Length: 107
Length: 116
Figure 1 (spheres, helix red, strand yellow):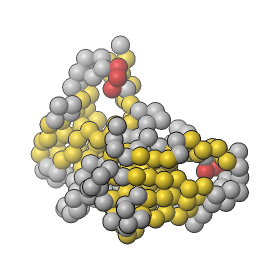
Figure 2 (cartoon, helix red, strand yellow):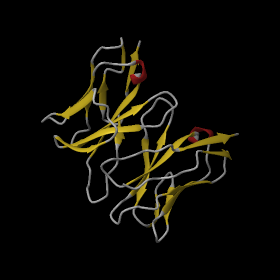
Figure 3 (cartoon, rainbow over the protein chains, first blue to last red):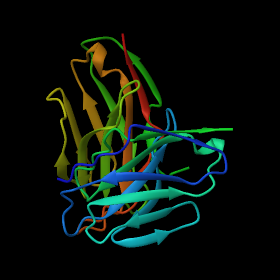
């Protein structure tokens, strides 16, 4: 079971790009990497998922290096509404959310 | 609207009591996950069911039990309740693609349990 490690918190300003890195050193060969966003008192919401290299959708990009031992979620031009907790998950089955990264976006 | 329905939304009960939380997954999703989130705490994985069978288990207390029924809805039973069981309980569902890919998890709005 791959354990993930993320920064506990990050601060940013509106309009900046934010990169949150997650470490998952013992990721298994088949494991996918998935990122979620959670606002207070709400269930997490899917942001993006990838297996290798780079994945981009309308809200974020996910960068995965060749060794797949880490991944970076990139949020372009954040706004105040992006203030939330961000979690990275690895694999399937026993999906552990970990501590997550509390992102605070300031005006 | 995620398509996942959880009932009840709020529940207040006393210590020592037993409650049942219910979850209806999105149409077509075979997997159901249960999570517990206490105040200012992260999401604690409790258990996963896939097509009626238990597939993965977290640090779920012996006082807690769950099952997934043939129509794929799931119930989480919490008994001998303690003050520390007060939390938001989330259910999520997914298609579960397998081979390391859980698919996208869709979360319900949660059931807020308060134990007095």
